[in-house]
Every structure is written in C-alpha cells, then in structure tokens.
Length: 73
Picture 1 (tube, rainbow, N blue to C red):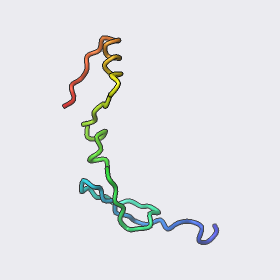
Picture 2 (cartoon, rainbow, N blue to C red):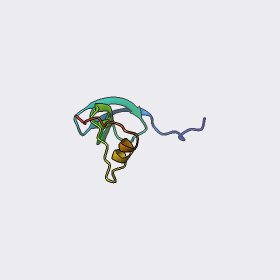
Picture 3 (cartoon, rainbow, N blue to C red):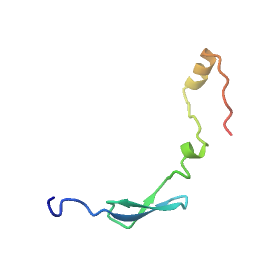
C-alpha cells in the first residue's frame, strides 16, 4: 500500500442533542462528533412517528379500501 493515502481511522465519541453518547470508530477529524438525532430520539425508532399528510392521501386511500385508521398515541 502507498504511504499517506488513507485517512486516520480512530476512536470517536458521538454526542447527540438528546444527551445520548456512544463510542465508534471514524475518519472524522475531531475526537467528538455532535449529531442532532440518534436512535434513542428518532421518531421511527421510538414508535412516535406521525404521518404528515397535507393532501389527504392517506384518508382517501383508507376510504377507497374501507380501512380503519389507527389512532396515534
């Protein structure tokens, strides 16, 4: 392998805006990486995901196929 062609791969501490921290390895230049969202606060993983439908497509689909909608909790 050629010398000095690959970036430095080192341990990095990832800090989320929600306060969660974890360690990983990365080529990121700093030793800490700040992120806005992680698996503990992302709506998809927490189960609090909401369907945003401004055109009424979900309601039209449910009406067309006679489906009942689940209430978001």
